[in-house]
Structure formats: structure tokens, C-alpha cells
View 1 (cartoon, rainbow, N blue to C red):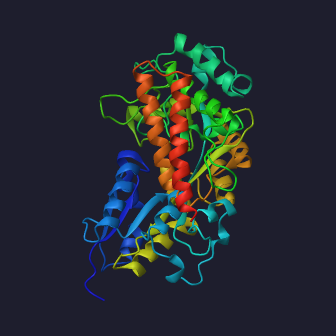
View 2 (cartoon, rainbow, N blue to C red; view 1 turned 90 degrees about the vertical axis):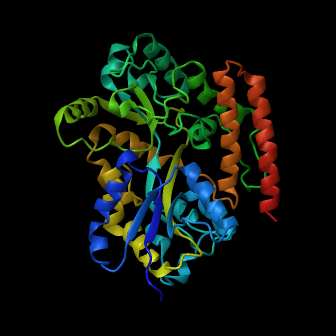
Length: 415
């Protein structure tokens, strides 16, 4: 083997600006036990991660290039089909996915279901957080008024009349989208709650043209059309949210952030944490979205054995649960998730209820690409909201166009 260059792992911004320091702290013992190797930690947004992986696919000499990547689990089959990812079973013939729930296992494999290309790292489960003090001032009972989407809209309307955060913002609800836009992951529980879906049960065609699917998308867009949830701002700064006191409501799949270590920031965060509560996703008892962040190795990595050692360190056992706790995420096993939630009695019930009715996206071969098509349509609709032009006709036309493009991709990927 040649001289070991820097082993590169590319991750998503799991802990905001502290993503790299958190990773370095978490991997301190591993790096100490690997004295001859260097580890480079790069942070990419999902958009830049997707673009860079496709540049690498088109140009084998593209630099920089990672050995390990963090990807949303539903990208696995798409990237495996394109030959980007390494079959992990070839590096570890004894690899057993049985430690993870069946839904997570399905997202680790390629489209044929035989080979394993990624391993779960941590999961997210969407619930609705609220601030007790804000709801109390508005006369809102979360147990009664936040059971379904109509109740949420009524609560937003009442909060908008009197809500002003400590940072001066007047949107009662934070936008969970890191780009302050709207995505497939954002609208999924609304769409399912209305009885709609993105794809047919056999994964061969789009169902976006169905009335139930339209109603679900329209439900979510009511939040931005009425000004209750912010859209893209011009500042380029990280979006503010409920956890820093900027809003009264927020849909999130994460646990509350760890408290700052000292000073005024800690006192302010402690006050916010004391006021936090949560209810299950308010879609009238419908399914909520379970997402998984996975780790994969590039097929052309020159140091696959070393890369797999690091993937095992991160994804298996206590290390995985410890990292999830450090970033406010849920660990990937049901037992570990329950243990983590016991530390948050005010929100434990909402998350446990969510786990019982959670579902993931179907593990389609082309789902990574299909998500990009849908999200592009959502961006078009967001632009119509900003221009104050969005109506049901425009939304229906956009979903029909997206559905037609999705049908084309599905017809090609099923061959």
C-alpha cells in the first residue's frame, strides 16, 4: 500500500457552526489510536454534497474527493445504482444489518436489495415543538388545539396577532428547512395526513396529480402564504428558530440543543428549555416522517479498509449514540432512542407517539433524483408566494408538471 494520504470524511452541517469541533471531539480516541493517519473533516450542505458527488462521477480526477460521505439514507439506492458507492459487504463479509429496524435496513441497500452500501448513523423524527409561555399568552391549549392542521392554523393566526420574539421577529412559526424554503421532507406528513402520497405503492408512477396530494401540499403552503412561517431571507445568515427564542412553534426532528457552557447565553437557553413542550405532528393521527442519516464509502476510495474502520466506529454501538446525543439527534436503535428521550420528559411522549406512526420514504432506485425534481417544484411555488401570485391553479399545474417528470424518471429506472 502507498503512503497514506489524509482520510477525508464529508459530513452535513449536523451541529451548525460547531459541526467540525464536535466531530473532532467525538473522534479524539479514534484518531489517537491511528497515529499514522490524518483525518480531514469537511462540511457540505446537501446541495453541495449532491453536486460534488456528481462531479466526481463525471470526472474521476476531480479534487477534492472524499473517502467517506454522510448522505440522507434515501440517496443510497440512487448513488449505488450510479456506481458512486462501495459495497460494504465486500469489506466486511460478516456485516449484519439486524441491529437496526427493518425500515432503516431497507435504506442501506441498493435497489436490488442484496448489497449494502451505507450504514445508519442517526435519525430524525418530526414533532411539533412549542413554547408554553407564548401559547399561554395566546390562550392556546396544545393538547387540544394542536391535534390537527386546522388547529395549528388557528393557533398561528392567534399567535400572529400578539407574538413578537426576543429577537424582534414576528413569525410565530420557525421554518424547519435549512434554506428557509419548502421541500419534499417538509410536506410529506401533511400529504400523508390528507391520504395522499408521492408514488404508487409499486413505485412505478407519481401520485402528485391526485386531489389528496394537492390538498396536503396546500396545507403546508398555508403557513408561508399567510406569513406565519418565514421564507428565504437576504441576509445569508443561519435561520433563527424556536430553540433560540425567535419563534413560538417549530416542526423539528431533533432534540433540544445542548446548553451553552456559561454566561448570559446559558441563562437564556435555560429559560427557553424550561418553556419547551412538544406534541406529535399535527396531521390528525396520520403518519409522520422518519429520516436517517447514513455513512457510505466512495467506490474509488484508495483507502477503503481504513475508511470502513472509521465508518464502523461512527455507526456501531455506543459511539453512534454518543454522537447523536452531542448534536441533539436520536440514535438509530429503538432501545437507545428510548433511553435518550428519558432525559427530556417534557417531550418524550410526543416522540414516542411519533415513533409508533412513523414511516420513511420508499427505497426507490431513483429517489435521490426524484426528490430533487420535487424540491425544484417547491422552489417554484415559493417564488410564486414571494410574488403574491400563488393560487390553487398554479399549484395544481406545478404538481402535474413535477409528476410527469417523475413518471419519466421512474419509467427509466424500472427498466
